[in-house]
Length: 287
Image (cartoon, rainbow, N blue to C red):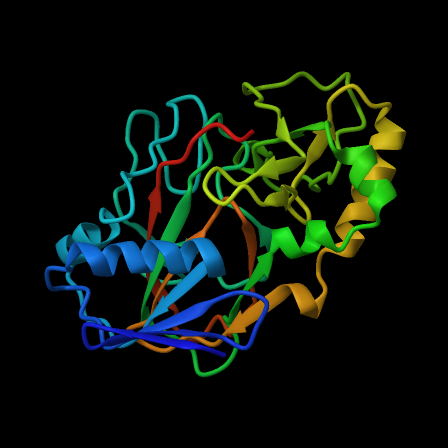
């Protein structure tokens, strides 16, 4: 574990596969350029930044997020969490009360907006109320997951393209498939193949760009062969040496690199309140 002290705040690397904790920084106040650059470098190296003890209005939260990029806006015909045609909420309530989204159940390892043409580069999630137990978030380092694969598997997947199907187009009460085996079912939304092995646009690291349970299809492979390969890769993902588990405190803001990691949420008691706000930042076409 190492600590960088700069301008009265500290960036402390976690003793974990990813993550740094930022203390002594008031995100509601103007931030010096050299501090922003240090934060961006820390995110690039450690994939998530955990800002402690924040107390922000929505405007202050937005102003802070925009130091790192512009707002993610999906195409009108590609629904995402909380979107309506022509309308993208600037700040999304991730909450089990007051009309918020995502409920109280388990959310399997995933990255946001992978089914869109330009998935988001990152998100910031701000904790306002947290349950006493459960509701922890895990972040998984997809570069580590890729690097630990056998060389034969790396060669096999090096040039494959993966379609991730939009989970927000599934019909209610219909079991979700993890691989598209039935080609006779018509598509109801555009699809956007992305590399199964993604190159991070800033670090150049190789990323195993695959969710744990979202419906997918490998372009050009026999469906059964593709399904077996994806199942093999997914069985490799949820290993403790790849992830960090975060127990939330009120005032935490976690900023994660959506281009390099997955995130997972524990289920929690529906009788407890969990109230958070999320901002997602624009990204580029994966390569």
